Length: 488
Length: 96
Image 1: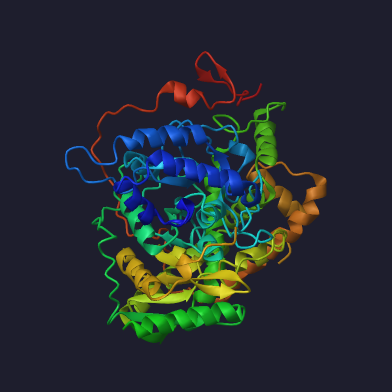
Image 2 (image 1 turned 180 degrees about the horizontal axis):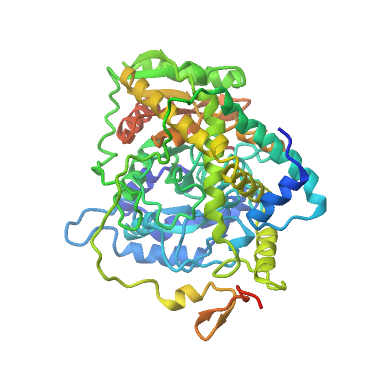
């Protein structure tokens, strides 16, 4: 048998169901793995081993639902939650000094759903501060290292989640994706990451960055695991007014592996100068594999794609400047007390509580919304957003899903882009269009460039998660990339 | 587009973030770089295009007005930086 920590969520679940291992065995194995590698990887902001073992003991008595005898799909399986997602009475720092001492009074809805299935929380995931970054380097506490090459970034902002899953510390993680923060780190760490349709998963308890874009989603070792975790966190929530009432399919039983007759669109604008040639090669080869499985391939065009990046950053930063206005040092969070007036206190609280990138983004968003600039920036971006949505609507008449690279390059060296915001932002060029349109997208491992994992992104129309997962699943069954693990 | 020192100070005042003299030059440079990225949207003709505020397809959400418990006082106060008589203490908002 392979080492316990190398297994997928589904494989561990089978061992638990057959009682070959206990939840405590699995939790202990994950905690040992964390002891062994966390010093090098740095995927967690906090680990609570005692709590994990307590939860494992509780899960041991209740692997099955009362009454029906059905197993809880996630019972007894250890996971990580991104530190932007509230966990009651447990640290939820958003990787910021601003919230270093914050302890939420409630669980986010997605977390409550996992806990009701007897999932085991190992700890909270490292991330870019307030989810603002693409490398996890803006964390106020420490960077996370890519398990495939410790000198490189894991991507971001959910870099801790992707790294913990790749390194065998957690079987899955919950991340959040505003402009690619689940998909891009999944791509860079060689794991699966899915951003759901806007509104499919409740945002209640997700610390807001850009409310019209933010979504919680799973990071897993393969597509089946992703389908399982997604099934557990979707659903309408009266605590989130943007949550949608959609049918809740069982995404796992939808994995038929049959993609015959599906029309896959390859958008010309995603294969242009700037994409690493081996990344492009890997994605094109993956498209050939899907074609071999019976899908048809059409070239399509989305002409507004080059403008999606500017559109996204104007919208995201404008919304962030409003959302982060709440951090004033009065009600919760860091508070600078040595000030003569309340306003000086607010300015110092924000000066010392926020890191550089967060402050720059708040300032840029404030500028884009300010008198004299609102029409030229914010309103303009809202109009471009309409164009991007219309183009997706049109292209999904011609095809069922789009296949693209997730990121233009594999993982880059730590420090390389940290002081060059625009260069960092350019890495999000393939993930932001789906965010702006509110449609779902998944990243699935599809090869390597310079020994580093490459992800392909599959984008679909609203509520097409089942189709995206099935395409990814069919691809996985025909290839072995998802079975590879980083060197010890 | 280059942004002036005065504009940086004006924005910082609007969003109430304290900045120091020695941060100003770097802020000018980095904010200007991102504003150049923003301005690429000028190339897109949107004269006939309406804005989309939200990526969802939501109607106004209504629910029945039912009484329910709010968060317990202790759990709210637990995160407050300063408390007095079960209330959050802040500096005077109106002076003089």
